[in-house]
Structures are given as structure tokens and as C-alpha cells.
Image 1: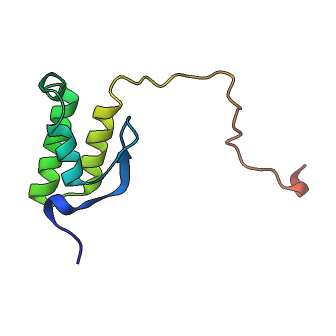
Image 2: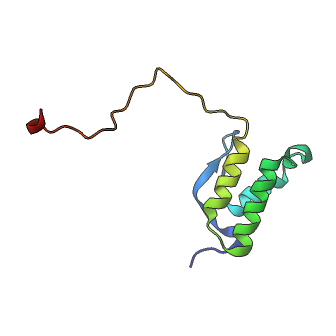
Image 3: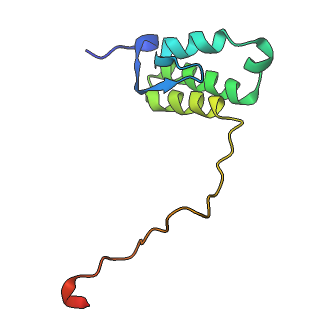
Length: 99
């Protein structure tokens, strides 16, 4: 039988900046409660806490909690466009008979 409540595992562990990993909802809650109060009060962490609580109380998908924690952890990271990246050909591949 699958674990219920705080013992539920994430589909994939959440990697922390210090190299540790969060495997369960309880691990994530312990990590968040160990944050300094000023950081834990940020809107991203509050959303992650709310997602954790909803997943545990309403038996929702653990992925919601994982996404909340990942968004809070990566809140300062901005994805940059790399123009040097290889271009992808998204069209249909041509068959030899069509050439």
C-alpha cells in the first residue's frame, strides 16, 4: 500500500543547492520550517507551504508540492536565451523518395 500523508514520496527527489535531496513531503516541510523567517515569509515559499498542506490534507498529487518547492528554490534564476544554440528542424523528415 502506498504511503499516505507526510510520508508520501516525490516522483523524483528535489535537489537542494547544498547537494542534499528531499525525498518525501516530510523532508520538504522540515526543510521549509528550517529556513530563516525572513526567507520563509517570501511569497514563493508561502505558496510552496500551501501546496504541501493541500497535497497532504486533500490527498492531491505530490507533483503539485514538488513544483511549489522547485519554484521557490529557483525563484531568483532567470532562463536566458542562447542564440548560439543549435537550430532544430521541427518539420517532417524527408523520405528518400521525396527528394
